[in-house]
Image (cartoon, rainbow, N blue to C red; front, side):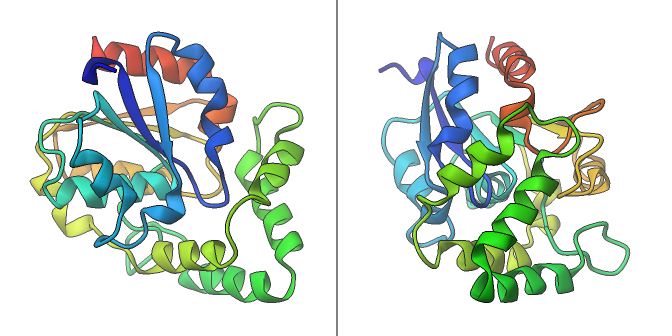
Length: 232
């Protein structure tokens, strides 16, 4: 498979390879190669790092947690010439001072709830993720696939989101980066994407009117068009 046709994908917290199914249909000229997000949490053993050490892809594509993992890997110098596309991403999930992230107490509360009521925690998150414009059946589809996530990965993913911070490295980013973010995202504040874009002129930020957090499910056709234009 030619590098020109390969897109490496890292999904969001709680998701599986199913997150990329609709986009793959909308991008028939490319082969999407999903990497489990839980295999990208440790920088020393990251599956994304291992994948990039082989035949290099045409694009690194990350959604939500996967976007943060992709950013960190790129900042580590592993993909200096590979374009990056981030969907509903962030350089830091947790709020800090004037930085517009998610309150750390919310992330900690999610971790605690996972321990006592995992099904309820996942249902509430899926509803937040899918609002306000996810397609019919998203909630059931997301929850059904999330059962395939390995035991312990969900808590580890929340710890990754709470601790990982690459904001100070944003000005150093040199490759092409397309950042797509729904202006009604209820999971990652749109202001965090605007913060990142303000730190580096190499970041092209496009806000998607009416879109929420679950962009691969909500607008696969639009994503395909933007990715096709990026890679043209």
